[in-house]
Image (cartoon, rainbow, N blue to C red; front, side, top):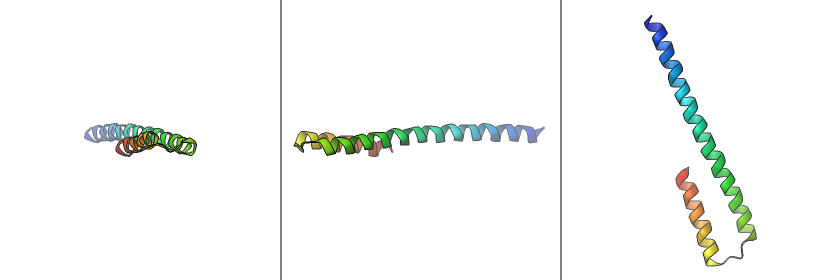
Length: 66
């Protein structure tokens, strides 16, 4: 009987780990998308200090998210 409980506990732990992995994967995909957008924005930017500051802020935010 205790073996069945152990198996059920392990299944629950695996489920939780899979959920956490899925969350991390989503965060990574969103961050990658944001980085690609920034690359595009940098290519199109005029290079003024406000734009550069905005890019730096966005990059810092992405770094903190990861």
